[in-house]
Length: 279
Image (cartoon, rainbow, N blue to C red):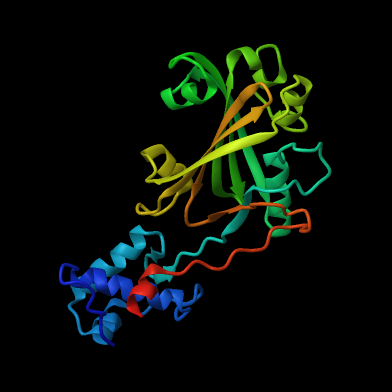
């Protein structure tokens, strides 16, 4: 077994890591069996033990592998949940009304046979510059943030924070330190602020220390950050910022007229870049 040549600037351990990614993508290793020990990989590839160790370190940092003391190195598999980030409502709702996120998450967890649980917090904070701009406020103005920490089968799944103008939330259940029956959308509807449209901004970034500690991902696993600004006919209603660990979530978007579908089709499995490079 040989290591793909790659570019002249690519160190040998990185090329070895790329070939191990390829073998993982092709299903050569299974989650219930340890990977070959370092001495066996050293023999297979004809490289030094330190090269093998560095290559395995790369995949551990990416969250693909986990070392279990005294047992060996295994695939670190997280079930990936498809989240319908934007699409048609799957239950009867007023025309043009956005699907309630809480309802969507519950339905998806049930479809996947997984248990969804949520920890809830309410805070009054100073608006970040980007949040203030999207809500039409001055930076530093007081806003109400309602945070939901979602877990699937007790594994961290997402952090969702809904940001409201203080004037909109004042005197409503949005100021309560508990979830609202029917979701925040029910409160907004009673206020005449039913959300009918939204704009999403998607970015990928590395987690901060607190985020990394909560998600319990590998040090090289990025977050997907979805920032949604919702609107009614009067203007912006709220900003919803949701953070997902990239190794256990996949956002699915519906585009165009999907009235003939009852559910969105499952997306094709992503192509592993390392596998593509090796071909």
